[in-house]
Image (cartoon, rainbow, N blue to C red; front, side, top):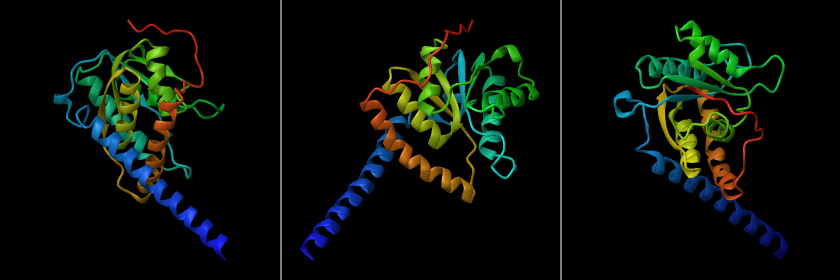
Length: 213
């Protein structure tokens, strides 16, 4: 019986520590990036490049993915405002019939953005990959990230901890139950940020340098 109590107590301690870690990671990321992340274009300086973080165009059931739609809306607004001259669309292309960068590029072209102003990063499998590859592959030390606020906060935090001067332009958020699931995963992803930083994790893939004029 004593052994059972000790095991229960140990699990309780681990549970509390886990909750505390999630809370502290979330607070740190949010507080540290507050002055760099905004939905107000007038608060952003001009940059050469905007980095659009990838997501699927459709949900698993084939419906419109509003995370995707709103990011494209924000990227269009950012480009047409003149705040950036080029866009990097970075996402997952690990499967033959799944291509986030191409979907984003096509959506932007349909909005009137010239193809030669859009660069595709096919190895943006994680936020960390997208952010670090923008510097390592595309040569950008300063840029504006486009995604929803909660995602921008994490991306900007990762960038700045890697000596990249990143800012975030917030796309409209998704206020549905599906959004709740995404944000729950985000809390856990913020804990992983600190693990990645501790072990100095690099992007999964390198590649040849891409010059942006």
